Image (tube, rainbow, N blue to C red; front, side):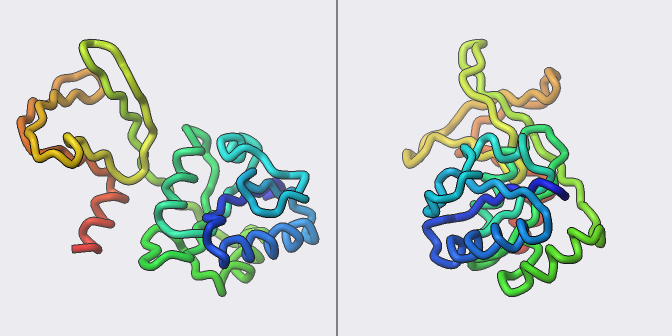
Length: 187
């Protein structure tokens, strides 16, 4: 790990503090560091647009909760970039370590003492009248509904171009194993 990107929930004072401590700590160990350009530390020359961090980094350190982790996972976009979650949220289902464990965990990682867990991600395209209007890569889940209005939706589901089923329902949740485990934990 020679290039580490930091994605943080900078609205959190603890995340901002952690990023400020983490950057010099990594540099002392010969690791290049890239911060999200939304960092409150404008003096850092290594700030990058959030979308470019995964392209430049060998690993991403996420300081925040599950929402911040999910936003970092979307950045990876098909690259095999490990994400290390440091939990600053309430539940921290996806984050592996608490804030207090960040530096000891990173010491082990930099020494090569770690394992990576592959996660399934889903590529999703939303089509209307035969035209794709949006596409996403997701780690957790996809929820299809009509929003705040309690109306039925008519959904045709295809996977890999093959028709699966047609649904008329309040909504539809398509979940990866990561998302289904989170739902079970929450229940």
